Image (cartoon, rainbow, N blue to C red; front, side, top):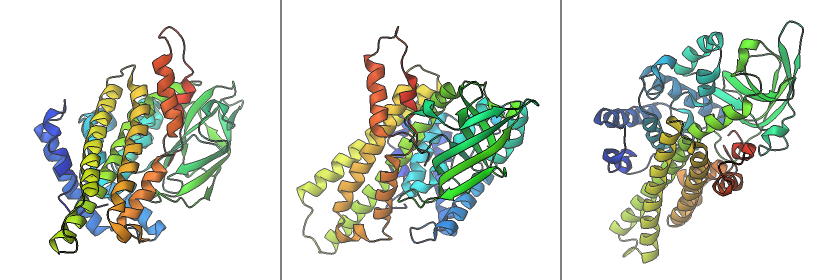
Length: 410
């Protein structure tokens, strides 16, 4: 959601000098990134009034164009085909993406394709990484009809065959990028009953899709993914059989700070748009002066958005360093940042008056997208509970890790 003011860089400028690992070159790259993104959004409009299928096609085009300009892989390691920039740079870029539209949450990096980059066998990496770094979209399939809070209760199962392959059958639901993904990372129980992940070509004939229209984050198709005897070779397994849960935990420790930053960018754009509207109304004499409650709401939201972004950057640094606290921080900051963004946008939109509830208003779209993010990549009560359990469990006692992997993949 593009605002009426100076863009997301205006928010980031005071923060950049104090962020470890971010150089002046990185700052210039982020400025160029926002300029390129703004140009592409002018060329491929994704405004709220655009028809859903056309919108997803334009979002895909934007991702490909950003890849051509070198922005998609800016923070991707060179071994995976990227530029090797710091991970916190991608977090800041996702703030910029959210500022312009929450549906740009897949505009940078490998997304869920990072699982392929880090854990796939060489033949699978060699097949998919060039496509992903060139702009192809990856998806992830974890959640099932019983919900995403009990990953170990997965009913999607693999059957072993004499030739060493497995066939996977089951139903995944609330799956984002349903029609647009080129490849899926699918989680299932292997023949030994262990949670395992594998790489599935989205063109596999054993996949059946049942779209569901979401109320927010509707840029990509969303719904049910049914797998019927989808064949996996040994090299299609991510990591080793039975490593599904550790892979999930490590991946979402990295991914959730990106979601947090995207949400906070959405709230920052709402803040700028509402502030600009209030200033315009005062200058035009429509209102004599701004009331204290409006000024307080603006000031409080500004502080909360900035504080949340700094916390998201810390969570990303911990994840990149492999710190044992990274998972806890990822859970806490994703939940806190999205809660903060949702409340800030809701409070700010009220200051815009009736204009905020028009069907195609960017403020209304921002509210819908932020409500969807309350569910995406971890229901918040589960995330907060996982953090509380970590904080109250002695280090010598094994923890029930599944609670930290509550996911609904929007």
